[in-house]
Length: 359
Ligand SMILES: [Zn+2]
Image 1: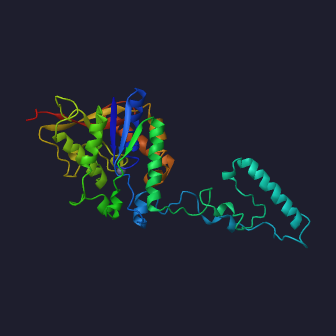
Image 2: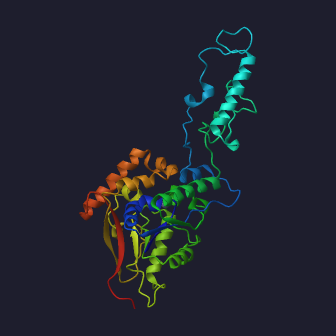
Image 3: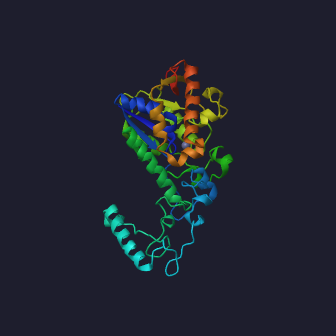
């Protein structure tokens, strides 16, 4: 049986449902993540600072770029002069050349493959032929990493793929452009109301669900009101309104569908109950109500955290640090467990139940 998790962005399924996903996998169930707004901008469109920040690549470089870490800024202990008149410890140019040659041979032996060969540089002087490691991006370079718009989304998709690999699940990217590429700017708009002219992902998501024939589909509740999360939630609500089509005679989506609490928004907002969430958009079809279901993840907290660590670009943005992430997980899931009297740590899902039959 397949369980489909509708994830507005690469990371939402792992953040919100990582415990349940781990337990489903232990039971041998299939898990597919439907990554909806995983798409980048139109070709050539560059990220502005707000978009970079919102996607988690803001001004925070992935490597320390403080002054002290730049090798150029560390003066030599002794003045280095090459050639005549230097101290007895300094090599003359001939010996430097020999040393350089030996270093190159050793570097080649070390890297083994020609394509990986890095030229050694025994002088610490930059030449075109022998750049200093610090000047080469992607080698632990201390240059500030300034991703292009497309690369930023690619990084996030690679993170999602690594998570899918970790859980031995699968991921489907719908590649719709993230809200920051659809003209939403600033937290006010990003966490505000969905624009009337913003197209719904309904047809795309519905097509994938019918194709995957899942036992259960999980949608975000959109706690925190991120517009991309709201659009996904609306798809779930619309599906509730129609019959389930892939098995005849058609029972309906109520009972096959669940809403998850968006972590860490739910933690930040002290979320307790959808009925008390101020967003007026949460309109259930007539005759349907939500019931809380608790998933005991007491033994799965390490696995959930390991999953979230796959999203290296997001941890600092959401939690400041790895420890911050662990603290928030512990705080949130123990609070939910207490509310449901379920184990030490729990995730909560809201299942739509039909109280009066469809007409
Ligand atoms: Zn999200």
